[in-house]
Length: 376
Ligand SMILES: CC(=O)N[C@H]1[C@@H](OP(=O)(O)OP(=O)(O)OC[C@H]2O[C@@H](n3ccc(=O)[nH]c3=O)[C@H](O)[C@@H]2O)O[C@H](CO)[C@H](O)[C@@H]1O
Ligand SMILES: [Mn+2]
Image (cartoon, rainbow, N blue to C red; front, top):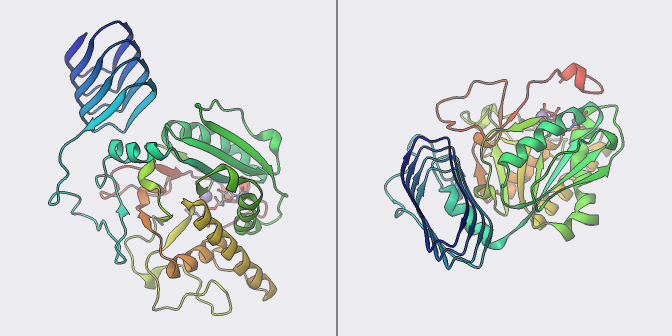
């Protein structure tokens, strides 16, 4: 079975290929979707020079000795589902020491990656983490009127967030009846957790540190290897994959990544535990997307919760609530990966030249209408 020089098709579909010795797909250029399904009994399944496909999906490949992916370039995602019994070999161009992004810095001054589109091969990265098959928890809050954001967040997450990995969305809400039924891929789940209603939005955002600490202690620790914390008022538009994983990964806030510390909205009052002196600071990180190894995340959320309790006793609330405490923590406990603002953009802002893809973006919302005490 041979398919060669397929150029410009939207969909290339090979289904129910039974009993062929060799299944060969070669020079498939510009297809949106390349789908190989129910290939039974072939000795060798070979995908070569598949260029520019959005998604390459191999499903139910049974009884092949070898599945060889050679020069599959530019796909956002290569997904192998129920490929049973075959040895998988990935072949790709030799990585270059000389070529790469030149328009942005790709490493921090403590020598960890600063992740941008073009600094990693998504297929190679995913295949590394696939072997570990990590369980990924996403801790979310949908309190009060914010339940309206759940459906689009999860539906778009299913298409773009850690596709092919095991993911559980832990949703803290005071309106569990408003959690939508969303079709999830295999290995993916939703767990709903109760949280009290709030009269101040500040209590919800700051309280995220407390409830995450409790949830990890009581449940998540047994069920996940990595934890992400995310705002719910966002939509995924593009791949957000295993390149984001590390012990502690934080995202550059889109509004401040081109400025210097003098302009960062850190907590500058020494009375708060989140205080950062004027001549200190690396980056300004958003509290709307961040993640890491479960125990590293636990230490972080617990510490920030305790710091905010001390603040409360002293009758002070950090200027940007949990985000201020997060920034303080990350200044003295450096993240092991820094993700560019691709990992959280906003519909409020134009996308500049250096942001090649918007992976997830905050929605425009009517703050006064959606928050219990209005305003921002
Ligand atoms: C891009 C960015 O930097 N975002 C930060 C900014 O976001 P925003 O101004 O977008 O804050 P927000 O209103 O989205 O609140 C943060 C999150 O808390 C939850 N929520 C909030 C209020 C409420 O009544 N119910 C509810 O469920 C919900 O998950 C929401 O997404 O300011 C917040 C408060 O300082 C947080 O630091 C956010 O991370
Ligand atoms: Mn938000």
